[in-house]
Amino acid sequence: MKKNNVVFFTLILIGVAISFLNVSYANAQESEYLTIQSKKNLETLNENPNILNELVRNVNKDLSNGASSSLESYKFEDGSEVYVGVEEKQKDSSLNQSNQIISFKAINSGSYRTKDYQAYVGYKGPGFDFKHRVSGTFQYNKTKKVVRNVTFDPQLSGTFYSKSEKTYVEKHNAGTHLVNSTGHFTALKVFAQYTTKIKVACIYNGTFNVTEARVVK
Image (cartoon, rainbow, N blue to C red):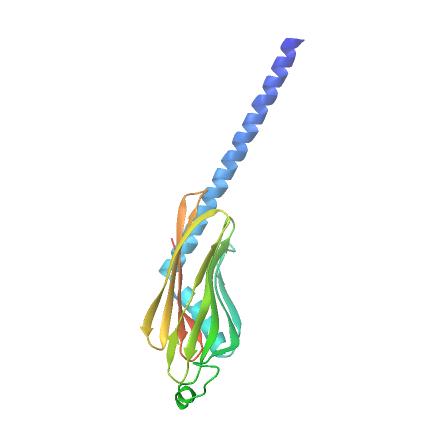
């Protein structure tokens, strides 16, 4: 009787082990398939930079037409998509040289105002979902045609990735500053790395636009 029980439990353990191996193999096959599809999609982006360029043009056009936000996306054959978006918010605060003394110089120079900006690029697909956002503020003076005090706050999101970024401000000229942000996403499950780039121009007239958005393998 004991011998039969041992055989029975041994068969159960063998069955569980086989099931586990089958599931592991299926997951590995699925992961490999998703990785291949993702690589194909990113190769498409690398070979056709106009895909993202068109998305950038569209969101900038919406901003120039007075929209406070815009989101544009491109869908691949497998249902995955890459997208670019912007948001803006005009603050009412003004930064005068002095709140107590109104001088001829202050009247002529005008006041600095503060503007929020936000731009992002991302990729969404089965098993692969990451987003690179950069936001901040800048002060501008239309009369002086000057931009100053540009801040930035980069945010990288994606559950199954280790993430790192490098962001800095480049002074193109007195009236235009560029926020350059590069993100790195490493997929822990399949050991693949993706790089995102987004550049935002902060302009003296109180507007901003996206000058570049990229997702590369």
